[in-house]
Length: 167
Ligand code: NI
Image 1 (cartoon, helix red, strand yellow):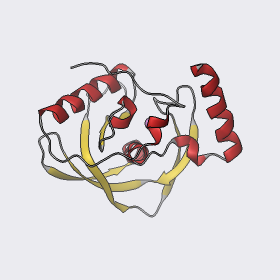
Image 2 (cartoon, rainbow, N blue to C red):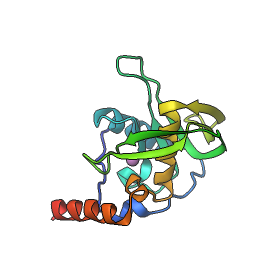
Image 3 (cartoon, protein in one colour):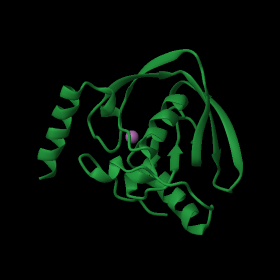
């Protein structure tokens, strides 16, 4: 396994729409394992393949509490098939936008259908932090970032700051 470099703002790759995974072959499994290692190393609670430069619909998540045993989740082609009627605000961060937090109100519960690391279709009903993380990571697959929930003015200030830092 390997820790991969994480792409950060303002790299336009983050805006790409990722393609579906066609089969869970050895290269895809290796990518999934590298993504988990990269996420734990960062450390973060979620990572999408596009954040390591691969435009495939793969995300890894571990929303376990600190000090609890790891609960790695690996999802290929994830799709939200149901959302709850209540919402919950949460201050989200993103490994591709270091030191920025955005309060986002999202559905408190979601059900997601995906293909797991063994190529098997799964369904998971999630709530709380896990539900938030799933929605955040799925946004990445469509090129959407947490700063898109801000006003245009606030978003432009953040993008300008990152452009300056990347010079
Ligand atoms: Ni993110």
